[in-house]
Length: 309
Image (cartoon, rainbow, N blue to C red):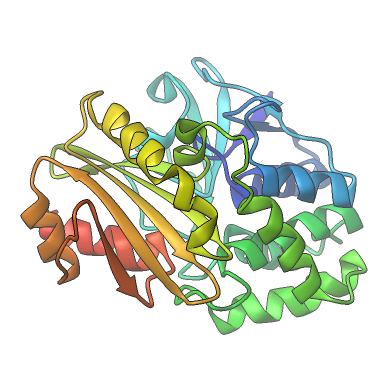
């Protein structure tokens, strides 16, 4: 029996490297596991591409339908972020660092969900608990994911556990300068030149069920907002197009990593509700929210409260 390990739709670096990491751990424990992702190599985001190339990692196998398969989920547990026909698959493991979602199972399974900044941090503990050494290349991927998810420790999601994991993994991966590694990833992640606006919106995007209403939240981490100054209208039109496909709202977080804040672009059936969620006022179609760095901890919880979830 093969266990197909997959992360969420529109995979980020944590989703991709966590699939590789958990599959590696399961294989080391005598199980047959294969890392997968809901993306093609052509659509894998630039940051993840850089990480895979830097550490010599093979990209997970593309998989979009899991009907009849035995699967393990990493970096998510929401049906809305799962491959097609997930309810017709047998979920045997969930490893995550987000809220517990709406995936259900018929039998008891292994679930490890911790309030840390990255799935890579949870996996680092799992390798140690199992007494399994992390291969150098896999450690590099997990290290990169933690730096990415915690925005080099600037995100409010960052914990002491994440910092401890980075300290351990950098040694295993042979990385002396994690700041330089993060900057290389940021350069790739924030590159927008020549990329279609809709692809940028979906570069790091998730749909959420907000009390029966579908709400999409995308995030672009940038060195400066000037990087998207010339394509603002294109990004707005892309958000409108995505919203028209049955969504109540689409939000795009334009996160300035240097200024440590986010310009939140909003397309919604109820702008007042979104304004109330963040205690701000839209200036046209966007508002600046100082200190907003994390979708998981600062954006989604506010929306859930506003929507009465």
